Each structure stands twice: as C-alpha cells, then as structure tokens.
Amino acid sequence: MAEIFPNEGLTLIYAGFPKGGSGPANTWIGLFTGYSASTVGSSIATITATWSEVASAGAYARATISSSSWGTAATSQSGWGSGAAQVTFATATAVWGTVNGFLITNSLTQGAGVVYFGANFDDVTGVAINTNDVIKVTPSWIYTG
Amino acid sequence: MAFPTTGVLDSFGGTLDGWSSLDGTGSVGTISSGQWASGSPYLWAYWDAGTFGADEEAYITISSMNASVNNNGRVFARLQQVGTANPDGYAVSANALADTVEILVVTNNADTLLGSAISQTITAGDSIGIEVVGTSITAYYKVGAGAWASIGTRTDSTYSSGGYIGAGADHYTSVRLDDFGGGTVVAAITKAGVGIVGRL
Image 1 (cartoon, rainbow over the protein chains, first blue to last red):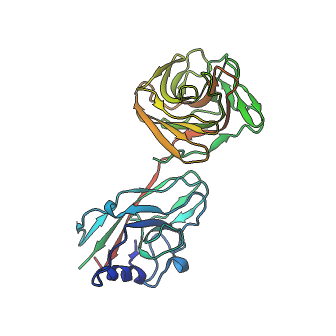
Image 2 (cartoon, each protein chain N blue to C red):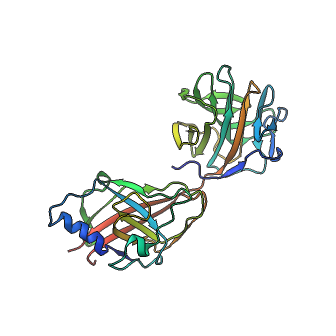
Image 3 (tube, rainbow over the protein chains, first blue to last red):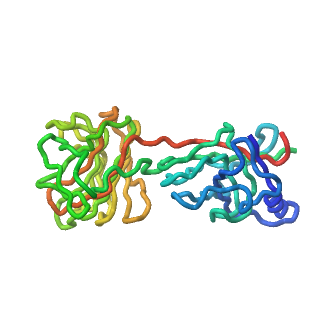
C-alpha cells in the first residue's frame, strides 16, 4: 500500500499553516485507476497528468466530504490524524475500470483541482467497478512527527 | 444504500416473454407502444425467469396513470407461492388518486398495509421501487428523470427467503408501465485507505 501528499497538496496545507490562510469548506473524494493497487503518484503528480481519475461517465462523480465530516484529530497508528465518514459513490451505470485507490481534492469537478493526497486501499487490492456496482470508501489521514 | 443496484430486465419493446400471472388466473397484460398495458380488471405478474437472493429489489416506471380514478401501480419482491391463488410477498404500491405510496405485506393474495401510507405526488413518468433487505422493506420513488429517493421504510419478518419479483397495476386499463428491473441487491464494495504526511 502506498500513499502520498503531493507537492500541490502540501502547498495548500502550508497556505494554512504557517501562512495563515483558511481551509476549504469541503473536500472532495475521487477514485483513480492509474498506478497500481500498491503504488501511487510521486510528489509532482497532478490530477491532469498522472492519477488517471475514473472518467466522468457511467454515473461516476466525485463525492463531497464536508469539513465537519472529518473527525477530531487523535492518535492514530504512530501519528495524529482523523477519518471521515464512509462515502458512497453513485451506482455505476457503466464499467469504470479497475480502481486502485482514492484521491482527496479541492474540487468537485472530475479531473480538476488539486490533490491533497492520494492513497491505495488498505487491503492493497484494486477493485473492478462494473455496471451496477456500488463502492464505498472510508478515507483517513495521518500526520507523523 | 444506493438504489437500484441492478439493471433493467424488460423495457417492453417486444413480446411479453418472462412474465406469468401472479395468481395463476389474472391477466399478464399486453404491450402497447413499447409499454406494458394493464389488463382488466387487474394485472399482477411475476418475472418468471427465476428466483433471487433473500435481499431483493424491483422497480418500474409508471408511464401513465389516471389521477382521477382509484388505480395503482406496484412492484413486488420476495414473492412465494406464485402462480397460485395464494401468492405471498411484499409490495410497494403507488396510488395516483390518493397521491400515496404504500408498503404492503401480501399474504394469500391479500394486502396488509405496513405502517401508514406515505404521501407522495404521483405523476406519469415517475418510477417506484421496492428494496427488501433483512427485515427492512423500503419504498423508493423517482420523479421523472430525477434521482431515486428513499421515501419510507417498514419492518416486517413475515417472509425472509428470496423469491420472485414482479409488478402490476389494477382497476383500470389506463395504467401503462415501462422499464422493469430488479433482482438480488448487489452489496456495496467497501474500501478504506489512509494518507500520511511523514513516515510511520
């Protein structure tokens, strides 16, 4: 399993601390088919270049995670983090392909915006999404010292 | 839970293959202009290709319905004893005159309302659905080409086994139905993952 906060995501985090900017009202979760079930993009990965998000067809759309959905940060594994409530994507009305993980972004629009972070699934297994499938994803994040 | 999780089984574009009378004697209707036309005085039918798993769903579009008379369209799930005078199962029924949707348990071909009727404006082109998961029976409704919405859930344990699904209409030939679908509810794929800043 792999995960990364790419440079563009870290830039937005730095904009909040120590630069004093405000965070987004929401984040949005998407699914990617690029890389593999155990690898993700590098620090320079961007949504348009390399993540290969599921195409905007077959009822695929990013889902909104409101800021309040993210839990209070607490000790998690060896770091400090939180999780959001499970997100249910719309029922696929066409084949989406094999999904290798998820993205947390700053935009609702498929294929757009900045990726805060991307991660494979904990079970290190991609999942083929076919017509009528429903996928639910529970995202979380951790900062380590 | 998302609804529906299964595809359309019959768009009524050809012949009425795959349908049989629910009580063994009633009409299975006809196809008219690519829609399923109600028989007289009623049309109760089940999809006879086979039974489905215990958790089932079914849905259909009400292409036309007379809002001035007491007609209704419905979908069935967990149907047992099909083709006899005493079919059992669950149903969701939409009545355009009353503008209500009812969740019903059907025993020996007789309806019993579960809970109270649900207020819902019924308009031609809307769709109704039923989902039975465990002891929960949920009615779904879709306005026109909009999104499906859960409009009510009832709990009942009378019938727990998988069975047939079906659909129908009654009282008047003004009812036209289209795009029937359903089957075993497809369980969602659940995943989790974590993003990490730094190294564990």
